[in-house]
View 1 (cartoon, rainbow, N blue to C red):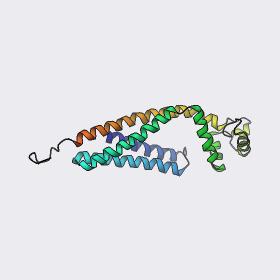
View 2: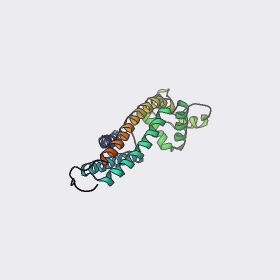
View 3: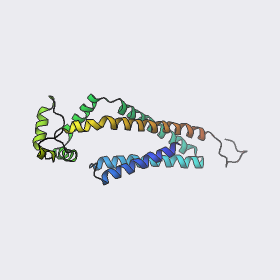
View 4: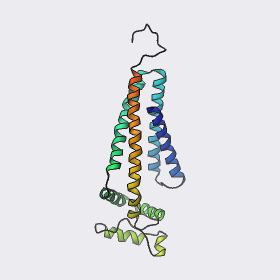
Length: 198
């Protein structure tokens, strides 16, 4: 069960990353590479678990259990964080990320989302005015543009809830996989000599 869910998650991560790059949804090669690397890692862990189970290989099953438990802890923590983040924290996260972006990246986001600037608030008024001046999104020619922060925040809460729920579901299938691997690891190999000492 655990190996199957890991294979499914690994293939989903690789497929979604390739789809996102193919359709130009995500332009950063570092993000795509990271998501594909995580997908390949999960596939390799699933293969280790399957080989260990098929061969009754105690050491492979042990390392599969340990790594799967560590993946469970990390995924459970990230999923709970996704579900617990509030709108104020989302605004802080977006503002911090926007400040780290280069002007070219900001212009790319503004063109992609058809918006100008991040948030029109008192804390970042100067940055907002500068972003609006540099903005060349199609909406600027029509005379009315939404702020990019408002557009991103509209979908962020829903996306975080979906990500958190899916992550929680798969994290519990991973802990089920650890439990099953531990039970299977303690069973006697049916191909072994029955009179041999275990």
